[in-house]
Amino acid sequence: MGYPVVLIQEGELGARVTNALQMAIAATGVDINWQIVDIGGEDQQSLLPNYIFDIIRTTKTAVIGPLMTPDNYRQMEADIREKLDLYVNLRPAKTMVGIPSNYQNVDIMIVRETTEGIYAGIEFERTSVEAADARSFLSKLSGKRIREDAAVGIKPISVKGCGQIIEFAFNYARKTKRHQVIAVHQAHVMAHTDGLFLEIARDIAQEFPDIAFADRSIEVICQELMQKPERFDVLVMPNLYGDLLAHLCAGMVGGSSVPIANVGDKYAVFGAQSTGTDVGDDPTSLILAGALMLRHLGEQEAAHRLQTAVEAVVANQVDTTADLNPVGFEGVDSQAMAQAITQAIAA
Image 1 (cartoon, helix red, strand yellow):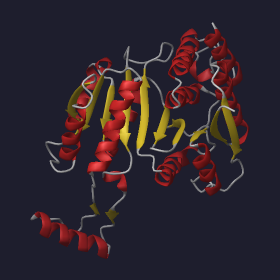
Image 2 (cartoon, one colour; image 1 turned 90 degrees about the vertical axis):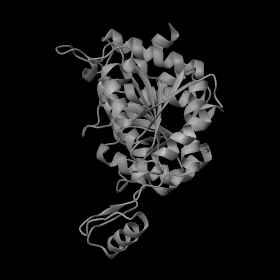
Image 3 (cartoon, helix red, strand yellow; image 1 turned 120 degrees about the horizontal axis):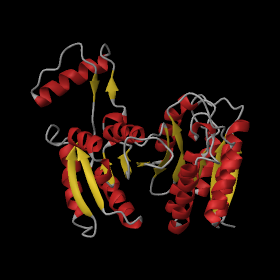
Image 4 (cartoon, one colour; image 1 turned 30 degrees about the vertical axis):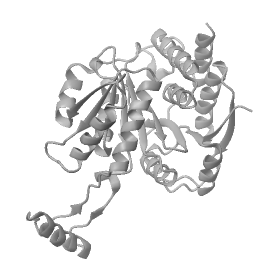
């Protein structure tokens, strides 16, 4: 029957792009048992309907196609992570011939922890009773003054949270034949939170002697990424830094829309997150998300062939959608581009 995968789409345009994904993956020879759910017309309120989570818990793998309201994706993604305990966010940043960029030979994987840190959402509005209590309590504990008009946020970092994201990064590097993991932190400023992250990273690194390990503070890695991003391989980091660096690296490789994966111990959800406001016909990011899914399923060789085929079609700049074509050249639709990718796989 093949691997069971939920495919979530919305509307006619979403269906065209998700169909392009199905065509491309079918060409790799990997058998996927797609369970298609169209949420078009449903009152989403920025969230997926509850019944979809029940389906995902059965199949354990899902792909979300482009949504007609992409601004809702961030809240939807947060809901997915919380309900399915997806503590890993993967964001590749890879230069491709045919997509304008100031850099060459960049191939970075951002591994971001998604359950802890500042983004955990433990904060109090400045005029609330809770904020006043928090200011008083934290001032007594720390011996430091907190202004009376301050809002308060808490940054929890746990041994388990650090350990599971760092182990994932090393295992991912080993599985995908990458050579280095760099832990990104601010331990010199936040010794007890980021310091814990760095301490655990150093301990776990000793269990992976075949993978090179280093660490960088967030300000140093930003500078080095802008200078020589081709030096970097896998970057693992707490929540906030991962969000910022993922968008920075996406911009560096010329993409406003990138493939993403949200992964936990039991479930994984793949998709393409757009920073724009319009849903386009370009299937590139979703098909690349399909390559991430194939790697997750253990189909490394098929994932490599799919990635290579996408890069070949994009580089050719003939059978690509309008947003990927040079100015003055008319692009093809998503189905024609997918057909070109399937031919490249077979070549």
